Image (cartoon, rainbow, N blue to C red; front, top):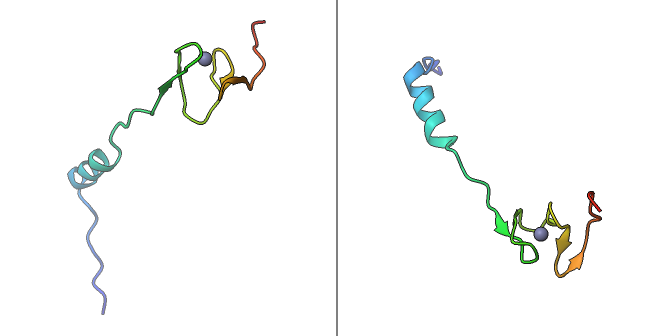
Length: 61
Ligand SMILES: [Zn+2]
């Protein structure tokens, strides 16, 4: 018969959480157009450039 395992202690669950949910910095790449940090495979948030073309209309202009 299966033995029910005991509840994990607070320390154990916190240890697990600390190990697995480490702060992972988001990967950012500098925009080649305006050198602002932008997410890779996304149009730049500040100038809207993607792959040497204007992919997104600018909100300011
Ligand atoms: Zn840009």
